[in-house]
Length: 395
Image (cartoon, rainbow, N blue to C red; front, side, top):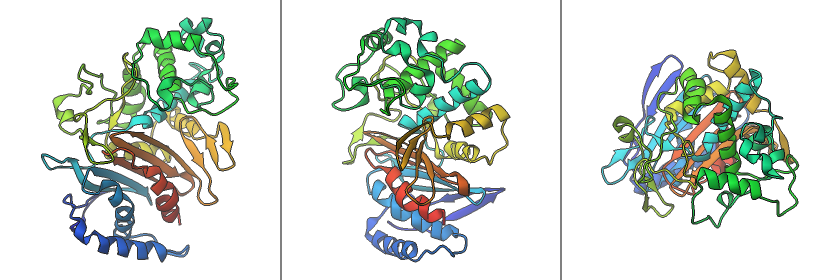
């Protein structure tokens, strides 16, 4: 990659760094070798990391995900400021570069926003984690199993529910709302599951949580999140758009112009900019679109570094608390996962589709975090962040 010195503009605690968008891999070996030497030479007594050193570390880890195929937008929160890095293309044909304001499909990272909405409602006394979902979705009262599932179990992936939409091989059909409710009512566990007794990651469980929240407040989930999470935090580029008949998000033209083209792991385009994916054909079940800049604000709020209203601040803190121990190293919180490998404790949430890879993670004890957005599927940024980026930065 042809490497051009970063341009830095400082405004208060925020630093914007734009890394050259043209990627020429013939010279990348030199950069990667320098970065490897830098990482190897780190010690616990190092001085604070410079912007150049940080850039080398991020480049070393992100470059293989981007290759000559796609683009990435990164935000690192450290030492009370946010630094942005951008690589490659949001869309190759027209040579549209990825930027901090490019809109990415953030897939399952949507769940942390819904968990925050749930936690705020709990703290305000509007509902309780122990409330049964059938109290808000009465169609499920006839289900022997689902009638016993609680909101807290849905948010912590401990309900035991598991539909074909939750694991491969993926179904070749979509769910209408009526079919979704019917299949939940007739669902029976195949592995001895009991509500609250095991951890099984479930997309369908969060769709059901969304439905319960909509019913409780008589408001669409997109509007709830806009009113209670996005707007209070100043997230101006984050939304859950409706899905059109072409499978694309119905974004306003100015927002669609910022949406990425998604690519497969092999570099083939999948869908069109604004592509929505999923198995649910009823309102509110699409993915969230957001930018690195917006998620950097959300990350700073999660770290307790923004001045926000107490109910929202306390809700964010609540979602980070452990809810179910999965293993000695992994604990499930409300949407977030808590990872303890013997180094810094990392709280994070990955997300991914076949044309998108996303990650947000933090070391709360160090007021440190990172956002990684890539418009290419199956890139696993959580592995790089957990194993090599956040542990190094936490030193």
